Image 1 (cartoon, rainbow, N blue to C red):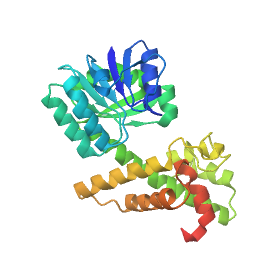
Image 2: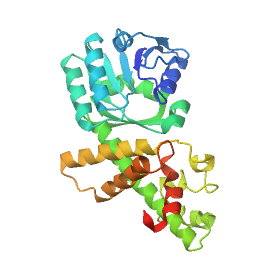
Image 3: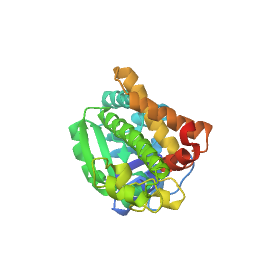
Image 4: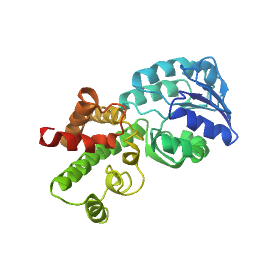
Length: 291
């Protein structure tokens, strides 16, 4: 399949490389001039999009997505699919989908879960909003880039699924870290804490798979000095997207708001930027009851 790939950063580059390795004809563009093995470099976003059956975008926010969409939609062939894998606000996703459909294109919003490791290994999960025809066309690409793709409904629903998932993730990571910090103060061994909670009603992905305590549970960023698998500033971005959507939908997200406030303090006022989001544990240990 002829594919255009726009935005080859930490996530986009390995995704594009996997598609090229699978035999697809990939032309890519990134404003930083990134070169990816097997991917033909274009001189512009429109150049990468021209003639492609599917154009994939992996971009930092909704404003950039809207700007790139304005550039590439006129360059795309009628019937092609615009597949946006960025994590952006729901309104931007739906606005871009409307513009694409008006130009005779299929549009999908398909944010991912799995981080850079999942992008590299081809084990991402895609949450997809948009038309069923476009989902059918792109399904073979999801199989290359990931292990699962869920069609969540019409345009914007992929973003809705992503931000709801990550609001849960942010809140559960905080309470997992709080529980470890409390266990320390109560004299409970961390391994014993893990052994109990990971097999009891308090279990979660944050505990069982991505444990924030070094040396406990499966290998996680906690074991490598909290080098980010999923950076705290990206969690903050997703929590803010969730709160913006909640305000628009008049939804009550009390714990989501509390999680956003704590990650904002950690990232913007303390030393959390550049660390994994599970580094909330040493932050809570350090601050104790002051946090």
